[in-house]
Picture 1: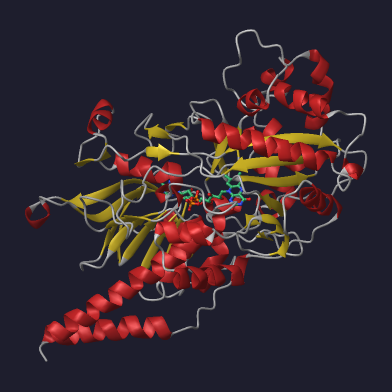
Picture 2 (picture 1 turned 180 degrees about the vertical axis):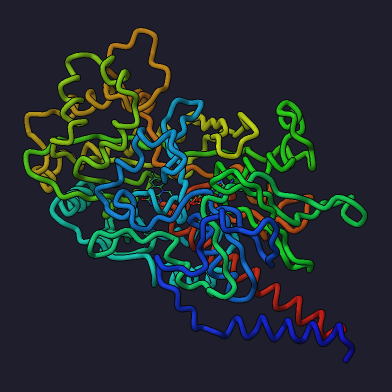
Length: 574
Ligand SMILES: Cc1cc2nc3c(=O)[nH]c(=O)nc-3n(C[C@H](O)[C@H](O)[C@H](O)COP(=O)(O)OP(=O)(O)OC[C@H]3O[C@@H](n4cnc5c(N)ncnc54)[C@H](O)[C@@H]3O)c2cc1C
């Protein structure tokens, strides 16, 4: 054997021994491999560089570290030791407007061009560190349609569930809501399950039995500490490409430029070798944004911003989709527990009905609005609004999300700064079918509120009409109001449009078949993939985080399998 063959045999041995060495003993939050980016060298080299330590990125990094050297770059800090992240009651405060201009906050607010107020994560663990915690798998039809391998999907879900999914406690409010759903005809009752099945069920939660949140960052407990590096407060500004010689036709991604919290520039490169790659997991806003900032996107738009074009790719930023949320807040004569989502009604017609209680969820909606907006509401409702915002009100919130949705929009850059939000348009309810689903969902919610099972948690003298009218008058969005707004509505279609909010399940922008191929490789360049919620056409299951984490694990396994196969093939050939 010559020297080259020996090198290949040795690296193959390295991969295999990494794969079989299972003594990964770092426990959250004491990860020896996690540091602030100010400690990063000016230049460093890895097998894989993952941009975005979010819901998909953490699962992916932990998996790839089983067989390769991995760098994970996250623009936010660690989720550990923060009350607003770890405790369920912190949900509303975490998303509150006070944090908008604070680069250290775990959530970054944005307002879509439609006028819907939303949030995106800026923290290790990504959306799983700021979300409502509900954990539910995608349906088998979704998995089949996407073309994933069913067995690897199931193995990947199980890997996630071992660390971060729990059965919720189901106290009084959630139990009454569950029984109300069944009474309203959302049948059968399927008990506790992670599976997506028509009927009423109790799903999982990433909050454990003590009410403590477990984010995707906990999946890094699986990571090999010897082959993993995580830098926090590391904002990636650009992906670098080789464009000369053999790469003149198809540029190859070979490094990234990131800045630490002091604004110091660092460069990280992938080591030589065909299998080494950069993987974008920066989420539905971050991934298309970074592709564009790196020169991959619609030519005219990049030119407008003075960005150098690498590949004219008009589909980057297209297919931006957000599932509308419509809700009814129900003041309760009896105390309610603090709960986020636990029970869910999965209807035949594609509307998912969920509930939360305590004021924390309500505050996440109301507090998102500027104070001036609150005072401009009709005075008849001002007292109620003040009460809701004052956190002294016992209340539940029953909400619905529609499947898909079909309506979609696009994303464009506003500036060249990756820390700025891009502009995003979702075109809620543009397609009639979405609106029809919303109306049917609202009809079901009304049945639940009227149900005997739920009666303990509503004032009988508050009519459905008054509950819905109050919602129409709450400052739930910044969408343009009808010209002569009376604060009333006549149809549920109108109600759906006027009270549209987000359930924060936005996706798209780098969809499979448009921006990436079925192996999540970006078209027309090499060495670059996108693995996160930006690749989806529709939100999976009732709530997406289980499937986003699953995708990180799934693709990590697939990438390592190809790596091992390629090394074997090369050693055989040599
Ligand atoms: C408020 C809220 C409530 C939700 N509730 C639920 C729920 O109850 N159940 C559920 O299943 N789903 C829920 N979701 C949705 C779910 O959390 C998201 O769909 C999912 O987390 C998206 O995962 P992702 O990996 O695509 O992106 P993310 O998890 O957002 O990860 C992207 C990461 O990339 C980082 N990043 C971005 N740009 C850069 C850059 N330039 N450099 C470095 N890092 C960068 C970000 O900081 C972030 O950590 C909710 C979401 C929110 C926001």
